[in-house]
Image 1 (tube, helix red, strand yellow):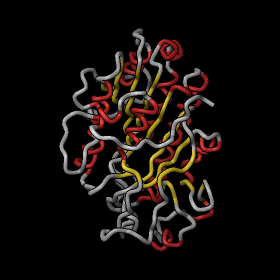
Image 2 (cartoon, rainbow, N blue to C red; image 1 turned 90 degrees about the vertical axis):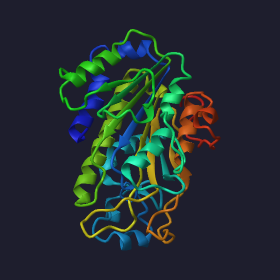
Image 3 (cartoon, helix red, strand yellow; image 1 turned 120 degrees about the vertical axis):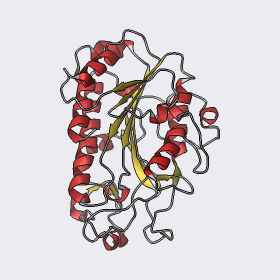
Length: 332
C-alpha cells in the first residue's frame, strides 16, 4: 500500500456509511497494527537532536535541529509527523525507543518472520502471535489491509484480506471495508493490520521518508478524529512496527542501510503518553555500526496482550516478558 492508498484506507475505514452503527455493536476492544514495511529509519523518525554525534553520522540526511518537533530537551520528531503532536500534547502518544531483539537478523523476510511469530532469532515458529491470541478470544475478527501476507495472523482460522490498491470506497477495497464495518455479529475483539510500503530507504531517503511519515501521521490523526466522534477512541489501540531500523551512519547514496533497533509509536485514548525505552547511544554502536537494543519487541506484545486485551501473554508468547506501563487502567 502506498502513501495515497494508506490515507484512503484510514479515511474510508472510519467514514463509510454504517461505521457508527457497526462500532456501537462491535468489539469492546479494537487493535490496529500499522506495519512500516521495509525497515523504518528510527534516527530520522525520533531524533536525538542534542547529540552532536547525530550530525556527524548524518551530515546530509540528518534533520536540522531547528526543524525538529521537540519532545524534550534531547529528543524530537521528524517535522512530517506534525499531525501526531496533538496526541503527544494530550498524553495519548507513547514513543518507545530502541525496540528490537537479541542477535538481530537483517534479512527483510526473516526479521519480519521473527516479529510476526514472536520468536527468538534462532527459533522458527509456524503460528503468528496474533493467531495464537485470536484463538483465546470468544468472538474475534481479523483483517489484513494492503498486503496478501498473513504475517502475525499466520495460521489464524478466520482471516480476511482487503485489497489496498483501490483508492475509492466504491472499489474492491471499499466493498471489503464496508463488509467489515457493517458486520452484524457482535465482536469481542477486532484486529486490523494496515501495511504501508516503501521504508527500505537505501537511497534518496529525505524526500521519500518525509512523505511516508506524513502518510503515517495523517492516517493515525484521522483515525483519532473519527473514532473520537464515534466514542470509540478509548477502546482502540494503534501500534506501529517495522522489521528493523537503519544503520546510524548515512550511506553514499543519500540513504541508510539495514540496521537494528528502532522506535515505534503506540496511540489511543487510554495510552499513557511519553517517552519509553532508552535514547540511542550514538557513541556506543556495535562493530557493524548498529544501535544497541533497549526494549525487546515482545515486551510490546506482552503489553498489548496482557494490559490491553487481558489475555495470558506469557502463554501466548511462550515466555514471560515484562510489559511496559503504556496503558491507563481507565480513560482520562
